[in-house]
Length: 138
Image (tube, rainbow, N blue to C red; front, side, top):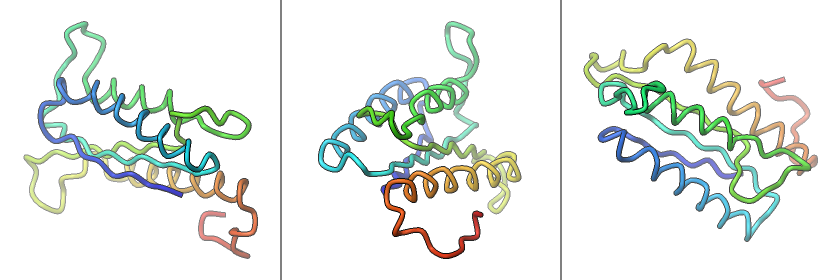
């Protein structure tokens, strides 16, 4: 299992398109070496830097999250290179006081639980001997 952690804290409009391409390329490279690998992608985005896209189709963070959902669909038998098993976008607001910067903390926590559950479910399908007798996610 591989979990990649990235952040996009400045220049979302200039960074988001490149980050999606980078993610798919990195995933494909790893999957060529080890096709059975389970990949999760966590990205932290600063809402303070977010803006509406020129085409008016929403914000850059919403666009990024929607595209992450489109590539976080890799499950057996769909093992296409460049896809990943799970993604978790954590939204922060750097203008808030330390300790309260995570936006919609309860929602982010639930999404984090779903993220790790999806990764572990896929891992145990591919490597059943790794499944412990009991997990906290069951």
